[in-house]
Length: 227
Image 1 (tube, rainbow, N blue to C red):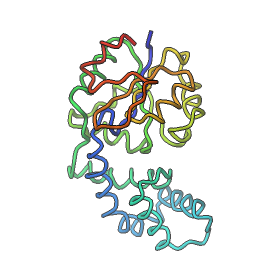
Image 2 (cartoon, rainbow, N blue to C red):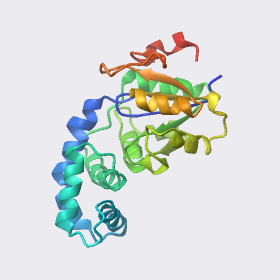
Image 3 (cartoon, one colour):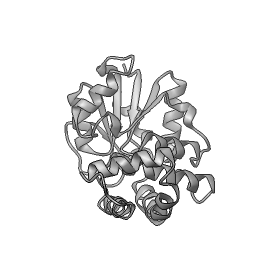
């Protein structure tokens, strides 16, 4: 019996194009100005130092840091300091009403129904916890942060590594077989399954599929799998 659900965001409960066509371009457009304006702010400075560590260059200039960040955005790299800085930039976008966080209607209804039925809901995304909470605080359905018990990002590890899911499970009050992981990416589902979790693929955008995991096109089909 499923007692907890850990969900991916992009491609699972929100459309991939929201991140690629709205959030990433917004961050890229505003990143240089943001870093130059706020580089002395403590939380921003911490991430700049983390970028220098990634570059193995403790003396990298602000211009070199910005160039690296923009390159990582273009290459869609899952680098933790980039994700943290993107979250800071997106915050102003949400707060100024430049966009709202897209959530599929069937995903919103599913999450509400599962929460009402007593399941604990968690999020695991390559986007920072801050970015996750911003999306849910400013979603198409208003502030839905109350639905989730906790949030995880790449600070627990890469999403395609079983150890990351073991680290999440260590923080949950349930055995692995009572935890369901939702994602659109087979490699992530493989890693979660290796850690002992139940898995379900959301096949919304013609992503590769695997017979190792049940799949649905949207959450209206969830009950048919009797997970």
